[in-house]
Each structure stands twice: as structure tokens, then as C-alpha cells.
Length: 228
Length: 155
Image 1 (cartoon, rainbow over the protein chains, first blue to last red):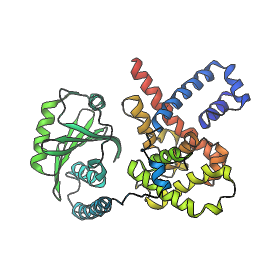
Image 2 (cartoon, each protein chain N blue to C red):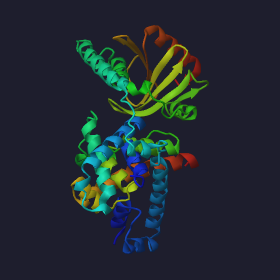
Image 3 (spheres, rainbow over the protein chains, first blue to last red):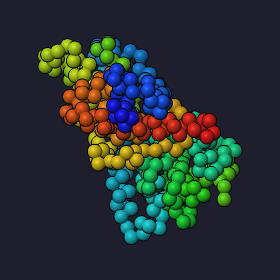
Image 4 (spheres, chains in turn cyan, blue):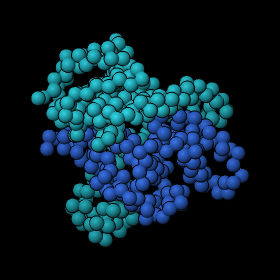
């Protein structure tokens, strides 16, 4: 057993290592340290995976007392497909590069309708950390956070954040890395988006009207200072 | 069912990442299992059998994500890396971001307690392929954990 074999086995099944594999770590300080690190991340994995189970789940299943199907899910799906098709046609024109980031931001919101229907990781401290990582400083929150999710973007990963504001729900994307050269704006089928480059990437705002987008943009200016 | 309900629900949750859909998924899977009960010849395999029914039900009910990638072609350093975040949420996000072919064996191992060989049998592949997927999945988790630890200690 060499160090590479040990590490491969440890990563593949850290909780049931054969005795001969374990014996390698007892004589190899580097692999012992590696094993401790893997065990620590396994504990974090356990904590993350053990999500709470709904009360009475088993009884509901055993007694077949099935909840009625949520019709709104079907309607939401149908609506999102219709909007996506409409967006597809409206995006299919010759000027797609002029405000591509803003249009893609709108498409992202339309393709992820659950961002408005669920609460997910609504942690203000996490939001502050995300902004900080992009070179910003949060003086105040522009609304109540409802949703934070790491999402795929065209050129990598970015954060999808939804705020509850007096004007309604507002989506903010924080995307590190590649950015547009200048600010962009787009309106598609009632959705309005603005995109602003910042030092380490860009942010995009999407709401259901251009007025709401402008107001949220102003709120964001008042609440977050970006480094030049 | 009482013995495996929590594991089945958690497995379903991490497959579809929606608690309402997960409950529906477990209910559908249990109905299907009930109808197919005579096909289960070895009661000691009941948990694996139920988890695979949940998996198949998930595959049947939910279309594959549009950005799904062929994992066997992926290089290790193409696995998702994480921007900074709180440690617990980071782990959950890494699990969510793992491609399905990596996430499934990881869930079956951690939640189901199955070995690489057992998972290979359940997913219809080889133990070597499962070891590779699990190794890559944990490399992504380990990278996240190492980055978090560095940030926490300021090093």
C-alpha cells in the first residue's frame, strides 16, 4: 500500500477502510493528516445531509392519505414554459450582443421560478460575505433576503439572491469573473433588468417592471459600496 | 417502511432538492414498491431496493437538468469550486452542485450505508467506476472544507 492508494481508498469509502489500509496511515504522518481532514469533511457532510424529515411522513405514506396535488406547480411549469418560449423568440434577433448579460439575467429568473416560491439560505451574514468577496461593503440590506443559491452562469458560477422589498420581489445576481464593458439594460415580456460591471465581476438586477428595477438599483447604491 | 422512511426522504430530497417534491417522490416510490412487493425476494435487500425505486421514480418524474454533463469525461479540477460562504452552507451547496452521477453514489453511501460494490450493483456499473465518482465527489468537498478552514484561520 502506497500513499496514492491509501488516499484513493480513503476518499472512495472513508468509513470502512480495511485494516491493512488503516495500517498505512499509522506509519505515515502525511496520510494520517490527510485522513483526519477527510474525516472532518465527512462530519460536515453528515450534518449537511441530515435534513429534517416532515412530521408524520411515514404515517401519511402507510395510510395512503395523500395530499392533493399542488395544481399551482403545474400552472407554474406551464407558465414558465410559455414565457421561456416567448423569450426565446424575442431574444432571437440581430441585436443580441448589445445587452446580452441583461437578457440572460431575465432568462435566468424565468427559468428558475422556484426562486420566488421558496425560502432558501436567507442569511444576511452570508450575503455580506458574498458582497465582500466581490469587493463590496454592505452598509444596510436593500430588503429582506428570501433566497440565496449558487447557480451556473455562462462563464462559471455566481450567486442568485432574491430580496423582498416594499415594491415586491427583486432578484440580484452577483457574478464573479467575466463582465460586460459597460452597464446594460433590457426589458423582455414585462421583466426589466440592469447589469453593472464591478471590479471583480458584475451584478444584475431583475424585477417585474423598469420602475421597480430603477428603485431597487437606487436602494442598492444606498446600501452597498463597491470598490472602484 | 418505518425503518427506512427518514433515509428514503433524505435521499429523495437530495436528488430533487425540494422538500415537497421529495415527499411526493417517496410516496410515489412506496406505492410502486407496494405493487411490486412480490418481486423482492430477499428482505435484507429491502432498503437498497426501496432506494433504487426512489431513484428510478426521480428519473422518471423529473427531466434531467439542462446543464447535465457526462461525468465520465470530466476532469477532477472541473468539479464545482465554491466562492466563500458559511461552512455548513458551503457543504450543502457543494452537494447540490455535484453532478447527478457523483451525487447519487455519495448519497447512497452516506445515507444508505452501502459499500462501493453494493452501489455498483444498484446503479448497474462497476465498483471501480463508483470508487472514481466517490473520490472525485469527495475531492470537491475536501477542497471546499480546506478553503473554509483557511478562511476561518486567516491563513
